[in-house]
Image (cartoon, rainbow, N blue to C red; front, side, top):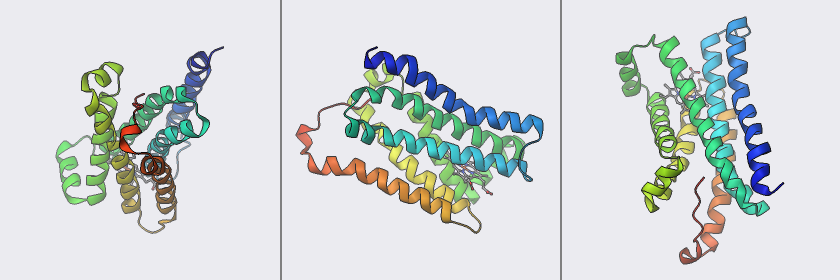
Length: 207
Ligand code: HEM
């Protein structure tokens, strides 16, 4: 099998199964009464962490590609990124349906009044923009602007950590750990960029 076939026949199906597993688990827990004592909070925490974790995995693809020198890895980045968007959307929908009972007036109030919701909403808007502009025809249509636009993923990741930190009432250890991981991910991406003169950075990174 060629590398492209391995990606298509093995890696992508594995990502689909792994990406849908947390969702399937939540749906099962919801319908069989296996959620936590505070079910809505439990679902919000689970889906929020899953979204942020998958966003980090998306950010890790490029350094991993450079490290292993397997350029075809870029082909799975889009799929993983779409799962981050999916869980962000599920997370938001749980808040909208169960906490706000679908009141968009209350949603607007929450966005204005609570800074962590404002940031979460901003992150979701970025993830939506990236998801909508991720198909190949959009990459072609936007040309050079595509790469610039997709750098917003860094802002989304930073916003995600700030949202996580702000949402905590007491224990901030976990969001701090996420923050430290993000620093490492941003660091390993910045290093080659600092070492390589601009003109030599020619490989477009889409996918
Ligand atoms: C409009 C968009 C969003 C809304 C309304 C929202 C709302 C919430 C709420 C209500 C909580 C629970 C806070 C509590 O414990 O009382 C929460 C936590 C969290 N959210 Fe969001 N969120 C949004 C977007 C996002 C996005 C896009 C991400 C990830 C990329 C995210 C990641 C998280 C994380 C990691 C937590 C903390 C989970 C934990 O405590 O274990 N949120 N969010």
